[in-house]
Structure formats: structure tokens, C-alpha cells
Image (cartoon, helix red, strand yellow):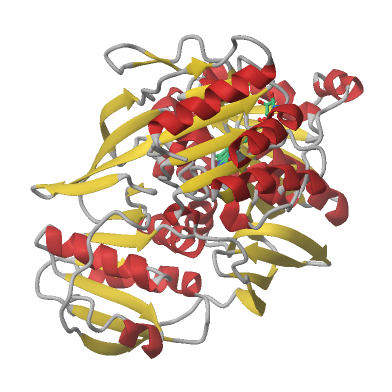
Length: 305
Length: 255
Ligand SMILES: Cc1cc2nc3c(=O)[nH]c(=O)nc-3n(C[C@H](O)[C@H](O)[C@H](O)COP(=O)(O)OP(=O)(O)OC[C@H]3O[C@@H](n4cnc5c(N)ncnc54)[C@H](O)[C@@H]3O)c2cc1C
């Protein structure tokens, strides 16, 4: 046994989220045992306040391939909870471990805490229209998005552990994604474009407005992922960036719930759209019903004065 | 003949959800739909089945409300649908859903590939593919933005936060595709007419031999309301509206 009392086992491929999950364990008076793939990631978390760090060694470079071995370990260690950073890799690992354990799992929690032995989690449903609270008993799995908990401090000992990997999926090639966009979560003003734009060159209309406003440029998921006109980190919403600028201004964005989830905490929301019934107007403080190709250049001119 | 499975879910359209003054939610006006991204999973299964020379089979776990999904799914080009019709679906969590789907898939022969979407538009839990993989002890590849089949080998590109990974796996396998994998065409009239003649296999909870009760207990459900000013500038021509907007933003002190 690595920890003397039932504790929280932690994994995230992003060290910042791992630190926050350790903070979550501390906050709830639980011991934390952090799993990393390799020694390097373990050392990076050594001062993060965990009780123990287990550096996994094995034949695969993909953490997902250790899911079954991790499930066995959690059981053997009488773990109380497996809390994983909500990233693509983390969600995959977490759900696979939950599958092997056939245990309860809550994905992308908005809030989580303990009531006695039970874990109480709140999460969004229907793209953010509905908030659901769930209670979990016994060994369970949750995934935690970044920015939910304060980090902790303190030295942890590192233990190296050989685990068997499931090598049926083999990694052939890794190409890093160079982040081209800005970190929208820190932007004070954001101009957001939607699918109303006819062609990539028309982004200039939005860029011109953003420049006079001193705003960053964001977009809806479809602009980034279907049309590939802006980098992935530029899209806002439940599966993209969650932002809290003082001012958010959208053009040709219908305002579907999944997008609006990402701008809930914006100070002011301004919408420009041809369709007066577009849901974005219900989410907006100010709006103009009109063609962005007309309205936006006029607005840019007006702001230059 | 090999079978390629597309898992899909019939969900309430989130755009039709009404939130009452006490924050309780009203789904009575909500139309059903095949979860948005499941349409991409269905299309991916059809394309994979064509390459493998097999059948594309939809599997869905739903209550009696999910019946209209059958014709919709078949009109998108699936050859058959297996419909697990069970009231338990209305209360299912990730565990129960994966158990139901995996148990139904286990009954099918020569399954070479199981395709799920990234996540359903109602829960967006993103658990189904990995859980089915664990349940059937099959290899899993998630976040797939591109895939290619050569013989019995699948090569996939996974889109992660920090990198693109190219991975290889021998079939059978479970895959979760991102919506960008394909454009999921809208079915034509001919396809809609043909759908009525395609086979549907109905399974009941009792046929599966697995427990379909959820493992988590829902203690509260409440709606979220945006409280915003909702001021539309519609006085005068566009130039005046723009002027009014600029004045309002200056007054708010956000410019
Ligand atoms: C599980 C799930 C997760 C999702 N996650 C996200 C997410 O994180 N982020 C996200 O953005 N989306 C997300 N989506 C997609 C989301 O549901 C919408 O499909 C998407 O946000 C719509 O993008 P849009 O507003 O650019 O396009 P559309 O909905 O096509 O809207 C275009 C708007 O432009 C207007 N318009 C057209 N021409 C003009 C003109 N000349 N001038 C002005 N207005 C014009 C139209 O009236 C319309 O309102 C998700 C969906 C699902 C199912």
C-alpha cells in the first residue's frame, strides 16, 4: 500500500491541473497520490503538496495504455477517488479506468466536494442549459477542468513503479501543436466571429474592429474546426475556451448554448446578427440586428473617432 | 461479413429546453434529435464499412421515445439498426449506457470496428467509447480527427491539446471521432424513402443480461438563466444604431 488511508489518486497530463487537483485533495482533508508517466513529470510535481508521487515506468508512451493496470492498482490501494485533469488524454484514461472498474464517473465537474463518504459533484448538461448534482459512493472517477481549485505546496516522495502496458494501440508519430493564438481566458476584450463570414479574407473586417478596440479575436467552434480559419485555441465555448472579458462582441454568431457557456462570465455581451430571433440576443446586453458586413465597418469607423 | 458499428443517442434538443421561474426545467416542448456529433460517427461508420466491404450497423440505447431515430439513422446510410429499447435509458449514466451498448454489440458477429462520437449533446460526458472498450476489452482510440483503414489495420490521427498523434491499431477496435472527421451529409429524399425498408432489430433490457441501473445518484437538476440587459438598438437607421451602441459602451466604461 502506498498510502495508509484511502486517498485520492490524481493524474493529469498538464502539471497545472495536477497541482490544482492536489489542492482539491488537501482542501477536503484527503491524502493524494499523484500518478505520472515517467520521472520527469514526477519531479515537476515534487513540490506540489502531494503525499506521494508514483512515476509509472513501462513499455508505452501513452498513459491511456496503462488504464487496466491503474484500475487494478486503485482497487488494491483501496483508493477513494481517481481525479483526473479534464483534457482529451485525461478524459480517455479516466473513462477507461472507470470502465475497467465498472464504477461511477462524473465528467468535467463544475464543482466537487465530500459529504461524509460520498462525493458530491455538479456538472453542466445540455451544453450548459442545465446544472446537475450527482452523488457517488465507493471508488469513483471524476475529471476536473483547469481553474477550479487553488494549488498547494509541500514536498512529496517519488516512487518508481513498473506497470504493464496494453500495447495494442501503438504510437507512430507525434507532431506538436504550436499554439498560434492568444490565451483568450486572460483577454480584457474579445471580438468573436461566427459562421456568417463568407470567406477567410473577411476575417479582416473583424480584425479591423478588434484593432481599434484593443481586443483579441475569437470564434465559434465551426470556424476553427470545420473551416480551420483560426487556431483551435481561438474558439470559445463548452469544448473550447471559457472566457471572462470585460467586453465580448460577436458578429454572425447564433449563440447556441454550447458557445454561450464560454461567455457567461463576460462583463458585457454585445451581439450583431441578421436574425433578430438568434439566441445570442437573449444572452446579450446590447445588440444590433443587421448585416455584419455593413454594421461592423461602421462601428470600426465610429470607434476611430 | 464484417460489421462496423455506429453508436448513437436520441436526445432532447437543448435549444427547446425551457427553464421555469423556480429554475426547474421543462423538456415537454423539446423535440428529439440524433445527437449532433453522432451524425459524424454514423457517416464515419458508413465510410469504414465501404472500405472493409462490410455492413454499417447503428446501435442505440433509448426509451420508446427514441423510435423516430431509427428511420433518421437509416436514412443517413446505415444498413441496419439495433435498438435497445428500455425505460432504464432515461436514467442511465455513463456506466449503464456503456454496459447496454457493449452487451448488445457482443451479440453481433464479426464486429471489426465500433465508432462513437466525441460526446453526446445532452450529457457531453465523453465516456462511452473508452468504457465500451474496457467492457469488451478492446483497444480504444479517442479524439480521432482522421482515420484510414488498410487491410485489418487502422491508422488514426488523434487531436490532443498539445499535439497530433498518429497511432496504429489492429481491428477490432473502438474509436471516438471528432466532428471534424467528416461533414455528415444531410440525407436525400431517396435515402429517406429507402430507410423504411431497412431492418431494425429490437432488443429489450432482459435480452442483454446486464444491470442497467445507474451508479451515480442525481440529487438535483436545475436550469441556468442568463440575466442580461437585452437592449436592441432598433431606432433610426443603421448609422444611428451604431452611434447608440458606441454611446452605451462608452457609458459602461468598457471601451
Ligand atoms: C457537444 C457539443 C459541443 C459544442 N461545443 C461548442 C463550443 O465549445 N463552442 C462553439 O462555438 N460551438 C460549440 N458547439 C456547436 C454549437 O452548437 C453551434 O453549432 C455553433 O456554436 C454555431 O456556430 P456559429 O454561431 O458560428 O454558426 P451558426 O449557428 O451557423 O450561426 C451563424 C449566425 O450568423 C448569422 N448571420 C448570417 N449572415 C449574417 C450576416 N451577413 N451578418 C450578421 N449575421 C449573419 C445567422 O443569423 C446566424 O445567427 C457544440 C456543439 C455540440 C453538440
